[in-house]
Image 1 (cartoon, helix red, strand yellow):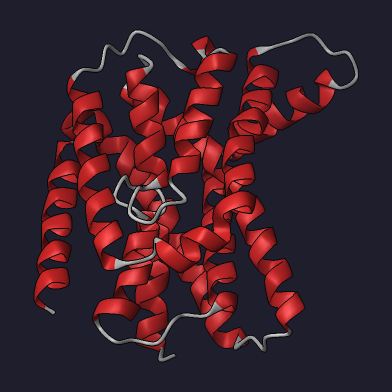
Image 2 (image 1 turned 90 degrees about the vertical axis):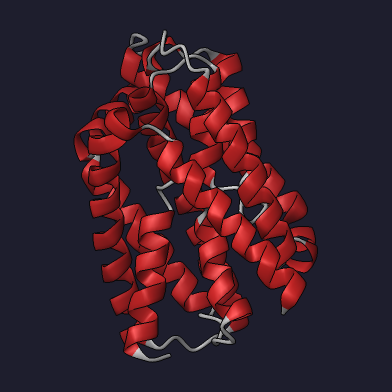
Length: 267
């Protein structure tokens, strides 16, 4: 892969991982629609590492507090807001991990098509618009209970379908449960860390078992660019969220979905 292609894909991964517009859709499309080479497993691992670095560094204080409180809970420490959030992230990750193990082959073989991406881009975009329009913003993350966490976790599992958007569907679920925009977005970002870690480890194991030879220059550039672009995206998204809401992202998804449908029917 050329340097320009590496940078483009890494930026796409870094930006779309945390915006409600689907990273998988944007990474699949260059190869399918523009006839470009697949980025390869090693590059996938690199961009996962980059986005994980970004989320952990951006929320480093939050993750330090909740990790410490969560570990203390094993030693009989008193339950706190941070320990409960730590357990919420563990429990909320389980549905997506189980669904990934059970349906990964099915998804890879049958659901990574332009038509599926177009349909899910439009469908879940409209659902995001509905959730944002009907939001009550009556709760924050500290108010989440086990049922809420499982609902958001199951919603995250749906993001295994390309075009759904992991951040989009978890923010949608959070808004429907009455969370504020900021709380829904932050919990979505927090919840991404263990899932990205699990996905990166899974892909890394697959890379090791396949014995693929990595182009280390591409891996290092991809990791760095994905990390920088993801960090900037998180910061920008949280800054403008309350001011612009979800409508710009919904409109983008409608345009993208319609374009994909047009390409599917006419190419």
